[in-house]
Image (cartoon, rainbow, N blue to C red; front, side):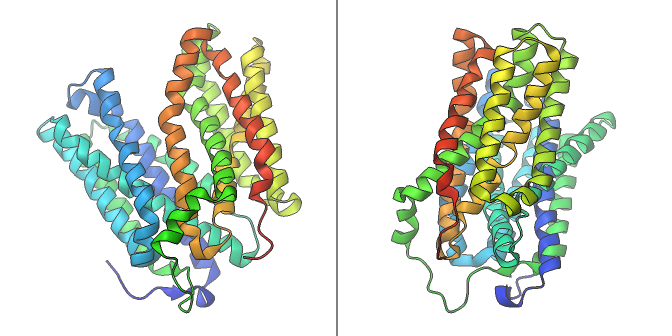
Amino acid sequence: MTTQAPTPLEQVSIRPWRVTVFVLFASNGIAIGTWASRTPAITDALSLNLAQMGLLITAIPLGALFGLLASSHVLELLGERRTMIAAQLVGQLAIAGFGINAVLTGNAVIGAPLLALYGVGLATTNIVINLEAAASDRVTGRTLMPMFHAAFSVGAVVGAGLGALAITARLPVSIHFVLLAGLVLATLVVVVRFMPELREAHTAKPSFAERMKVWVEPRTLLIGLIVLAASFTEGTANNWLNLALVQGRGWQPELGAVTVTVFVASMVVGRVLGGRFVDRFGRVTALRTAFILAGAGALVVTLVDAEFAIFAGVALWGLGASLGYPLGISAAADDPRNAPARVAAVATVATISGLLGPTVIGVLGEVFGLPQAFVVVAVLAGAALLVAGAARPPRTV
């Protein structure tokens, strides 16, 4: 794989750079969608019950946390291109090894550390592509960050669809995951040469102490709250919406599944169109609008029992959930000098939300009912609405 010197930012060709970022977001989405589509086959191959499978899957976010915490330091050492190559090699070789192990040995103890390495690769890749996307927006003056995240969502749908085809063809997960790894790495070989070095050669690198200091910066912490609320808002719908309507409202499972489709489609629409809204009205206004829509949509789902109203609420919820994470990442990357540390910090907060969020909703749902537990989404959206001003670009960058 190529390791030639990256192109300096001031010499980069914008169009190939943007296409590269879109492709990398989409390929990361395909990887996620592929994994999600094969979890039943993995459960069977490893002979796990639901609780054991849940414990095994926890290895991915745990590995992701390590990758996020280490990513800014690795980036300062290796730069964007080499970090991307290393992250993708680790992640894709790990998931390929996991698939082979699942079929050949069926040993979950061997599989768990491989999934943790997969999480490291995914999280580190996520930091690099978001830094590249934020730099692209900063250089061109156009907000495409939400659309880059839409590419990830579309990639996840494609990955899930390809997974369904693999299941139909009775393709073993060992072969499927090896093919996935080969596809992702082949894509990387083609596009990685278009990734520029984001920092100027004459700019001094931030020290270790400076990189760690971002964890006590008020603005970074407030952006972390924005991203936490956005991640919680999206994750709650993905994890619990279907079940809440089936068990809490008595809907048929097929109809409940349709609401999840409406939610995902609304998120994609919000991300495709969101950049224009940001460029016209500003990042802070876009965030406030998004959290108002998300909170209102969640409250409709919680308080109203009419099907039409619930579908409308889910659509609002999805539109509102679409912008918080990408715009929060953009805000964290406003200052390019220490952007990796700040982006990693807010992404870590989002990952923690993803770890704790399902448990919080599950406990509240057990006590009050799942639809009623969605009030937490509205509360967090309200909190993010109050601090959205922290995402305003600094006067000097």
